[in-house]
Image 1 (cartoon, rainbow, N blue to C red):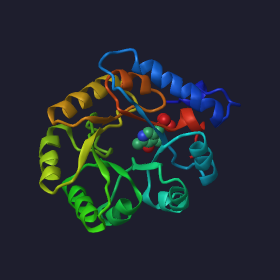
Image 2 (cartoon, helix red, strand yellow):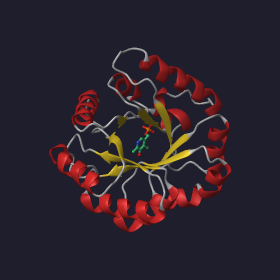
Image 3 (cartoon, rainbow, N blue to C red):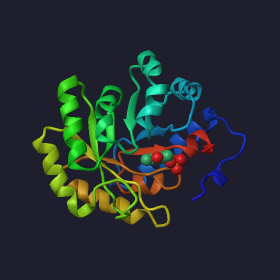
Image 4 (cartoon, helix red, strand yellow):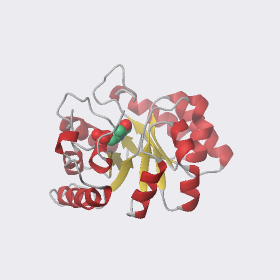
Length: 230
Ligand SMILES: *Cc1c(COP(=O)(O)O)cnc(C)c1O
């Protein structure tokens, strides 16, 4: 998927942000099923601290980082200066990084197995921090991708509730080569089945579909920051 082509080359973050907000709002009002509010999470992997500071200055209040270590290098000073900002972990978490993740992130979107659920719950109890948790669901059942398989979700939700992990909702990353809409619809159905209200789904190329199918948060990188160098 190449979303970079759709971005006018010489726009700035200050220009892209309002058009993105307008597009999010336009998608939100298109269907009665959409969420009353859609949170824009700026997917800020590889973006340097000065770009993050500029996004905060422009009013972005939620960010998603993929790697605990990268976030530890970029975020502590920014978070101290801007306590209103919510930092989400949207990349895979290893259980040996649970303590660091709970100390830094306000939300962890990638709970996908019992070991991680237990490690995060233990750290939340130990550190006394409020961290919102999402289960990542591997809606495309791709072996190389993180996320619990849909058929194992019920068991993982039960574990989370058993260990007292505060569950907000579900997150998914549809297969890159498929129409994402059926994946968003599946995630919506699974969340309803399990009494979960938050749905983190939709990225630069497909956020409008995701919002029409009930997303409460979209994770946008390229459309906001431009093409990544990675
Ligand atoms: C990078 C990333 C995004 C944003 O992707 P874009 O296509 O650049 O908007 C969203 N979610 C996750 C988990 C990511 O790693």
